[in-house]
Image: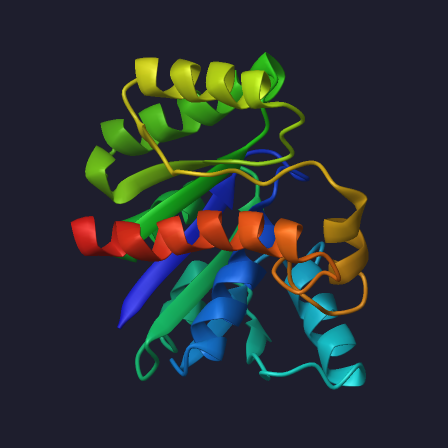
Length: 209
């Protein structure tokens, strides 16, 4: 069993997007998976689950809302992948989630307004005892190759690993999720392949921790 947590201090940077994408690809591969939605205020992944059921999208991905990290971890056993969509804010719960996770993914955009607070979150987790090798950045909402390269360099300079690939800023990704699909289920094979490359990098990172 692997516990993969998606955390962020900020909303809208791709946390739920990647959590749902990983859950979908794991389920498609025949693995058992559960997606835990810990953001009870937004319930983004829970709402997405309802849309997915209404559209009869396959594979079916179990999603459950939890009021706390402690409650979620009680259900973490018995599946191949337990994917945690954490609240969009840094908190004591974030550290609690990180302590029990095999891999902690923090999505971030390319602007300094995104990058600087993202680095501070990982610094705080590191200071609290979370090993850097269990933490990865994922670049999301990227507009150009130059933007990706600059953001990657900034994060690596801060001392953290950055996953290969990135999520592009494309309306098709938003449209797919709006009908209960994931970012690997758009009508555009090239975009699906791009998203799958980043999600596959998450799965490969589990082999290194």
